[in-house]
Amino acid sequence: MRKQLYRAAAATVLGLSLSTGVVAADTGNINNTGPGSSNNIHSHVRIKNKVHNTNTVTASNTSDQSAYSGDAKVKNNTTGGNAKTGDATNDNSTMADLTVTNTPPSHSSDWVGDPGGNSATIDHTGPGSSNDVSASFSSKSNVTNTNTVTVTNSSSQDATSGDATVSGNTTGGNATSGNASNTNSTSFTFNVSNN
Image (cartoon, rainbow, N blue to C red; front, side):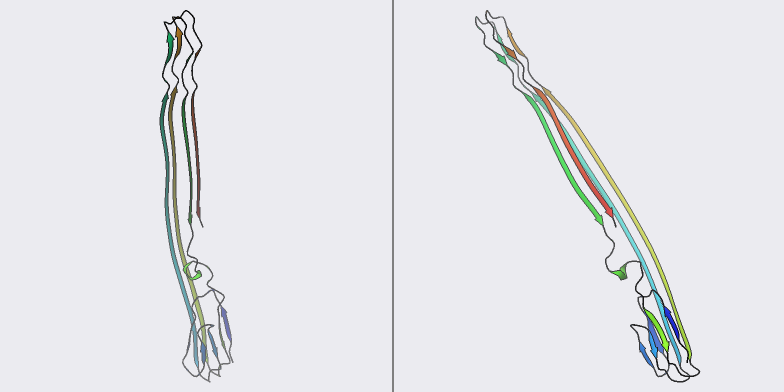
């Protein structure tokens, strides 16, 4: 009686018996074969994976704003009132949120790894039997991730309040110029994950 046990990382096990015997292809078992049997279990697994991810993310924000208030004049009056210009305001707010996730195939047979601890056994063979257990495992993986993220934010703002003039009056009021303000708020959030 000759017994050989081979445990390998294999996804497929092929069992062959050239004589009377029991072959279980799922576990790779050959049992109780007759005398002078020739028993072979061959397992060959080849896994080749290629994953290419090319992610290009571009965010561009361009703001060109202008705000002007007119002139206020009170002049050449016996009694002049108040001169007040209005406010000149620019406001820009931009928000971008982007998530890119690249995940390899979830099925174990589609990704390089241990396909499982399958076993191949030959036992209780008859006298003078020729038993052979052989297995090979080959895996090749090629993963290329190219992520390009470009963010461009350009803000050009101009706010000018007008002139307030009180002149040439016997009695003149107040001259008040308005406010000039610019506001720019930009938020970019990028999350690129290659698993």
